[in-house]
Amino acid sequence: MNALLAGLVSMATTVAASPVAIRVATRFGIVDHPGRAKPQTRPVPYLGGIAVLFGLTIPITIARPAALLPAALALGLGLADDVRDLPPIGRLAAEVVIGVVTASLFPTTLPEPLGFIAVTIAVVALINAVNLIDGLDGLASSVVFLAAVGFAIVLDGPDRVVAAALAGALAGFLVFNRPPARVYLGDAGSYLLGTLAAVLLAMAWASGRPAATGIGSLLLVVVPAADLAVSVVRRLRSRAPLFTSDRGHIYDQLVGRAWTPASVTIAFAGAQAVLVAAAVCASLLEPGPALLVVVVTLLAVAVAIVSSGFVTFRSPDGQS
Image (cartoon, rainbow, N blue to C red; front, side):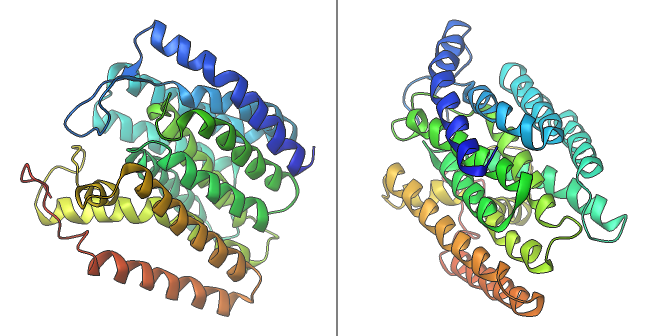
């Protein structure tokens, strides 16, 4: 199966599966209710992640079936969290297990055990990073969609098919998740997307690939990683618990500055598109220049975040 066909199959399957997920979630009360740390004003069904996984299954089974194992584990963990609200330590331990499984299945060109540790950390970090940016209609799904497009460009062979399948599934899901969203990813979906982003990142660092491909691919996950970093720094500065929710994420702050939720989603997608372009350019260079592009881009992102006051923000309830 080529990448284009994979994307089309995934998109069509997800479009067909999403209304079913909406009905099932509504029938069993698996919905996201309005709350202090949530911007919506009405209950919205979860289980969108199941529709995305359905969309991915056929192409990934044909191209890289090993990727389905960490994906299924992540979705199962997220679904349990959606239904029962798992304790943070237990959830973190399960995320580490998913990271270990991913690192075992997708070794990198980095020397061991550094490569194994790096992939495990990437899985845990991206599960939480994508989960954190899943706070506005279409935000996480559009960002990961563009990241998947970037991976589909820089990767080749079966790995490109996996990336294209993810992009296609999310294109189909955005039909229902764009503002105003009719269904959410839920923790099941955001954990799934974070895990697959880490899988694709590991693929970019696989043995036999140009070093510039792995280096440039780091920029494809900067948007969720940056929001995670800002959240951690804010909470450490204020000595707030790391695992509590608040309304101080970058997108929350922009909404607080009178941006509409739709405009924030568009801005995040625009930033992701710029980073995809930078990643693709870096991947075409020699390793040294590619690393320079990545470092300069990361510094620019850091300066923009700090100068905009996102790190020093204090939410109205006193939490950073």
